[in-house]
Length: 455
Image 1: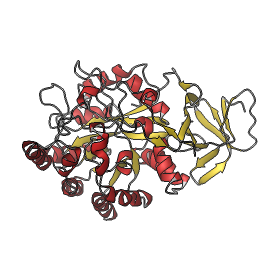
Image 2: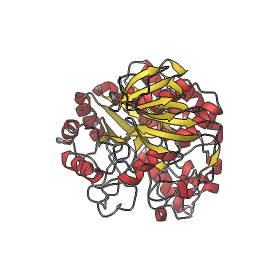
Image 3: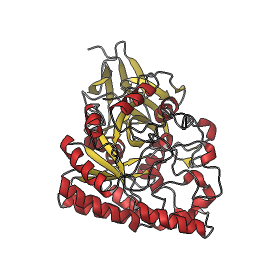
Image 4: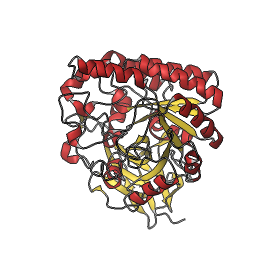
């Protein structure tokens, strides 16, 4: 049989464990896995000394295109997907905000697809939004247009001065939206923070003259994450809606979610790389570039988060890549800074270093938390595993290869990131999307735009 590509000599993460085998690819699909594969005229990638993993599927990414004339200079599809390729991310699920208009109905998702035409370095799946103003048909339109899931905020979200911006749900909108989404069979992912409490605590802190990131963290205490999850669980039981809690930042919430799952509620959760790496006591030394919501919590809580990742209580890890322009981070008042971290380029390398190299995570579990579990939860057919018949999406990882993150090496439109200056002990050596090399250490990011929207 003639192959287009053969990856040789790598340590390949297969569903049953890692093996030193070769991978043959034809027409973008994995055609054979084994030894002594006949190369013929195929292109060869020598992966000697490298780990070959399924490409990361980042389940939580914000692209701000279209920008509606307001966010035009935030992250676009070209730069955002180039950063994904460089970071070993072969697919991501794009959130229905911060683009303008937000993705809440047929017209807005079509506008999004048009904005990304011929700009994608990696594959993109879409979230649809659940907002108070799309309960009269918008959810069904999004289902027909191929969203893989829906997203809602119970925390305060969106700018009411911007027409078409996203908006958080009230209790009725959440309940009714969950009823409607349950009929589609798809998942509702939810940003779970108690908006009225965190908003008021933030207001009071600002009136006292507080400006530090530590003070910002204190206005969003752990119980303000846990309380809305209790309500979401109750609503899920009532409506039958499948739910997923995004970017969980504390162990108590993770335990609550798993207790509900053990009782039969269809609920899962994710955390983010930054919640497993940074900690509250260092935030003010780093500055507003590391501000996010929910906030990064105390150092004493880090290992509890890691324990729950290792125990399988956290289904996967994401970037919550949520970039903005530098001026929105350039302030000494943490309460006024944009809340979001640019991180998609440093998920795979940092997680491999922190989880596998420093804490001894198995390679199989590593592949699960960056790819396989995401594909399973959101039913992304042909993605997330190195198996015959699956898409030939790979990240090649060079372990024990420390480097320092430099601003100039970032592919983001706005080169800001809390990881700048940090040493990471592994590198992404190459990224392959459906059999095509879209990044290598030697050549950099390819100009190939072979990514596609899945609809």
